[in-house]
Length: 79
Image 1 (cartoon, rainbow, N blue to C red):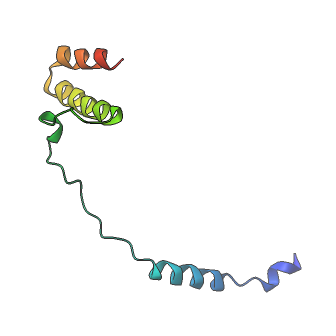
Image 2: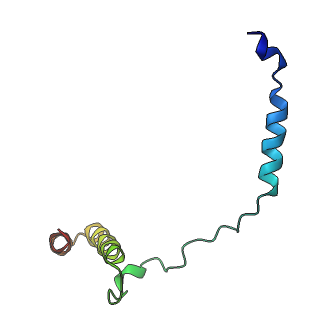
């Protein structure tokens, strides 16, 4: 295990820290949608994955409001 005697972990840490400081990330911005954007959004001209996402948000909202039958109808249409 003599090879570990030459290992200096501080070199790696300094390089990693310096690398992190040079990267410029854009500032975080929250979702641009309103809180209940999915209630009134149109599903026209949307890709299939977006339509599924909209429907799943609506299912969650309906379930939370206690409207289980309509939530079940949307889930049945998805399957």
